[in-house]
Amino acid sequence: MPDIKFRVKRQDPGDNNNPEAHWEEYTVHYEGENLTVLEGLFYIQEKFDGSLSFRFCCRASVCGSCAMYINGAYRLACQTNVKHLDTDLITVAPMPHLPLVKDLVVNMDEFFAKYEYVMPWLVRHSPDPEKEIIQSPKERKKIDMPVDCILCGSCYSSCPSVWSLGASLGSKSEEYYLGPAALLKAYRFEVDSRDEGGKERIARWNNERGIYRCHTIMNCVEACPKELNPTEGIQWLKRAAVRRKLFRKAK
Ligand code: SF4
Ligand code: FES
Image (cartoon, rainbow, N blue to C red; front, side, top):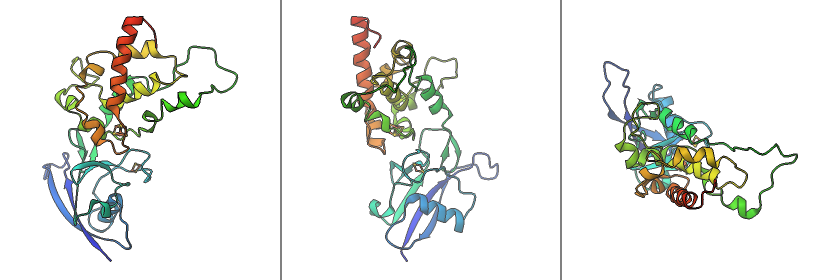
């Protein structure tokens, strides 16, 4: 039965006796060839410390809840096989630059508020069609990339433009950045042939809190565990904003 060492960052800001961040080590035993980082965390929770906190849901890389900082990179714990990390030591920390709730759980409220702000739904003004709206393969291809976003928040956590502006959407300050995931979602609906919300949505992303805060650093592309390219979407939005200004088109 192979062993592997896990070093996990622990912190409970609500614990008055020990509120500081610290690392704890655990030896995880497993059978067979495969162990995901998420399974390792279950083992630790079951055998060593039931208070270890982390998020998960689908265990199949589709819900985005288990994004963490594993061996120096953003990864989904359920998707990461320890064998593929090629090391005897697995370090697990919460996604950096986000407010910590406890251990590996970060507060995603601001992330989801910004996501909601860009109107991440299909807007229709035409009368409801009698049948489903057909997309051609060419039209569907345009949303192939952004539609795979699972809202894990890795790109948002990795973005220096997000770090440099502390204020949130709900604050009075104008100093915030929507971040790569929200802008990728805006792009996803802008390029959707069925959407008619261009006029309403553009005011939300075409400003200094939106696309113009992206300095093409591309950390988001490196961080994304689904290998998506938020920067590509943001660059498309920048070009679309210019086109609309020049040609006064809604979309
Ligand atoms: S673009 Fe990638 S990193 Fe960002 S939220 Fe979506 S899946 Fe996660
Ligand atoms: S548990 Fe859903 S993505 Fe990992």
